[in-house]
Image (cartoon, rainbow, N blue to C red; front, side, top):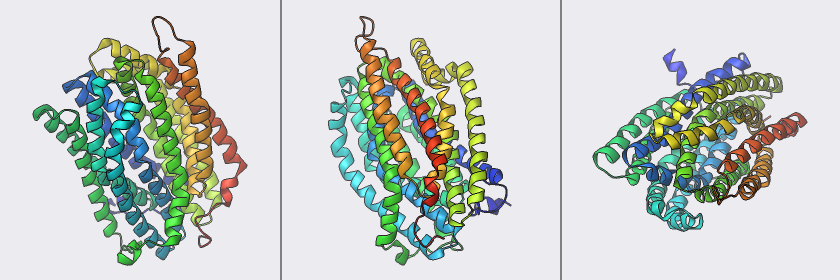
Amino acid sequence: MIKDLFAPKDMTQGAPWKRIAEFTIPMFIGNVAQQFYNTADSIIVGRYIGDNALAAVGSAAPILFLLMVLFVGISVGAGIMVSQYFGAKDRENLSRTIGNCLTQTALASVVIMVIGPLASKPLLILLNTPPSILDWCADYLNIFFLGSAGFAFYNILAGVLRGLGDSFSALVFLLISTALNVWLDIVFVARFGMGVPGVALATVIAQGISAFFCLLKLLKMKDSFDLNWSALKPTKKHSMDLIRLGLPSGLTQAIFSLAMIVVQSLTNTFGEMVIACNVIVMRVDGFAMMPNFSFGAAMTTFAGQNFGANRLDRIHQGTKDGAKMAVAVSTVITIFLLFFGHHLMRVFTDTAELVDLSMRMMRILAVGYIAVAVTQSLSGVMRGAGDTITPMWISLITVVALRVPIAYGIAYFTRSDAYPTGRPESTFISLLLSWTLGAFITYIFYHKGAWRKKRVSSEVQ
């Protein structure tokens, strides 16, 4: 029974809702653990160093996300290809896909390790990062970039495991590294006084360990695929498929990250208190989003395997089941945040003014999580079928054409003596509106059904 938990899962058999739930629960716990990396950083920084250090970690985040989109793209492309080839029982293409993923990840890691440290400080200056936190931000980013291989390989290898239907193994490895991350945070910051760089170093070490465990797991899965030197050799077909499927998702994350950077530039004009507030809200937001992201990943794997097996009937039923579960969970989370969110804010800081400001902003966002549940579920199905272009365009419309202009517009028209650069609510209102419109557009494109005509390659029939 325990052995079965760590085995690949065939999602083309059994009740769709049950297969989705079995995949989503470990995925959700794993996503919470992943988010706990950043949250533990914020709590320890806020408690042991101060609110300015908390603002430094938050200001660095958008740049970190932007320069990591290479890995996000490879991971998504890998998950789609692995799930479809696994569903089609195509061992050769499955093996070559996994091997090419490892090779591309190694190359991308080198690129990030070179470009990241060179670009971090100029970008921070460009974004009007307050001088009081500039050096902390730069140190935090540079350590992350130099240790990016661990982050990269964990995300890619976990994506491969998820494509095989195994979300439990990645969960166990991530829980181990999360516990290590928290312990190292406390040692480096509280005991050795390393400050913000110590937090980054702790996370880099922990992520590297989780990546190592994922690799060991894949090396033992010889019943499903072959991981040898022949599979590691780059091939045009598999490399291009990874790029074709992963690039739109990577660009989608880049769009989000660029929007975050542009909006962060606006947030920085509101001062350190609002910057720290934004960090707290986004940390809580990260946890609130986890069920949605988990259902989205589950729907991608479910749709991919069943698409590879040519089981469209199961995809339609699974979409209904998955979307209903996602909306129900997000509704519960929304209610909890509206009534008890202030308790979560106090975990990060004892400053009463900062707690109240953060709760005010969270009330603006809370209802939007239900809309995101719809977007993630339906987008997950489209991606699993091989349609990564449509979600990219939807993101482009909602983020670039809606969120950024609205944020700056509201800030501009609410300027006053009390708020010389505008009201800080502007960034959160714009985010809520972009989520809502995104759900509506995604629903329309899902029912149009163009995703049904997508395949990884002609070999998957």
